[in-house]
Length: 73
Image 1 (cartoon, one colour):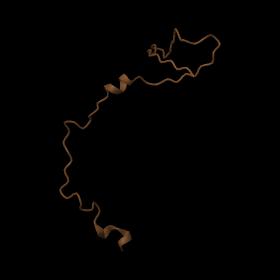
Image 2 (tube, helix red, strand yellow):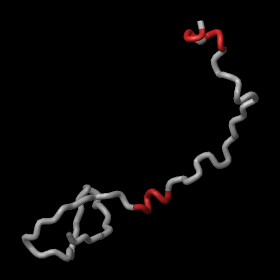
Image 3 (cartoon, helix red, strand yellow):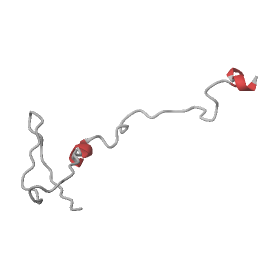
Image 4 (cartoon, helix red, strand yellow):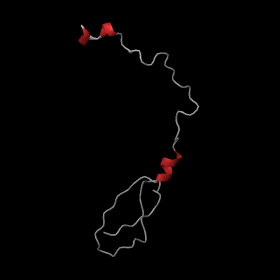
């Protein structure tokens, strides 16, 4: 199986035009469309940077009091 990669941009009406493919007329091909990596790289890689950190005064204390657990009664 031959693979060919090409990057292109959709037109305003959502049409995709692919030209100059290295395949012969009548040859059967499979088309998979993926979003370009450039869009993913523009996303904020560190969304919590600059945010106030969480603070746990007693991180090993249970969040629910022991007397509220039905299994212990």
